[in-house]
Amino acid sequence: MSKVKYYYDPESLSYRKIERKKRNTFKFITVFLLAAALFAFLFVFIAGHYFESPKEKALKRELTNMQLQFDLLNKKMNEAETVLANIEDRDNNIYRVYFEANPIPEEQRRAGFGGINRYKNLEGYDNSSLIIETSKRLDVLQKQIVVQSKSLDEIAVLAEEKEELLAAIPAIQPVSNEDLTRMASGYGMRSDPFTKARKMHWGMDFTAPRGTPIYASGDGKVVRADSGSSGYGKHIRIDHGFGYTSLYAHLYKYNVRKNQKVKRGDLIGFVGSTGRSEAPHLHYEIFKDGNRINPINFYYGSLTAEEFSKLLEHASLENQSLD
Image (cartoon, rainbow, N blue to C red):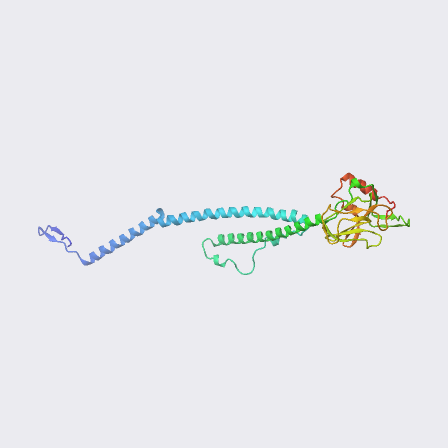
């Protein structure tokens, strides 16, 4: 029950009851409510600017952590791009050059993604541009890695083929220097020992005693070991692959058979003087894609620079061949 209030009336010299008018009551209530609302608004406004709620603190920590993670991601992407650029440079300027492969064009390595908008679902957020740009960098980086991976796969195949090629090329002298009497005749125009006429001598003649070992000059497969070719007598032909074939003629006897696989340096036969031959020696020829070529260019695997110079000097003399 509300308290009754009185006031002193000097005219009647008595206390009178204070009667509150309804209009004043309504006015008072309205002012009170307005003041309360204003106070509440000011409190919320000040609290919102100067005080953080637990939820806001948690969100702020999460945002800070996400920013840190993004900075780390960006740093790792920069490092990955630097490392990949170094690999690409070596791939184009070392590996592919060595294995005689065309360099991969820069526009192919760094090509973007055309056509439809791949990042539409990332639009409409506060940091959409940042997220889209990062996604693009990741996609391009991923594509570069795929391109580089395929390139290295290709290089691995080329390296394997190169290794096989280097092992297959007839690169050693078929008769050891210790066993040679002399290098009788080289590739070129020579005097025929029987007719004395000048004619093309398609190989090199190595003079050595009968029975001197003859070695395969490169890896390959024996395709002939017979005396069925006119003038060569007992002879061996080795298919080295890659278009190379070597021929060893006037043998005394064989140490291999047809279809046998041999390695560079394997003993394949012995020096003789069968067929059209004037004295014991090895007649040696090399074919490339079916054409005879000068064997003098294929001794890098067994001779020193001094030995090769002497061999080159003797091979260039226009003397008489032995077959």
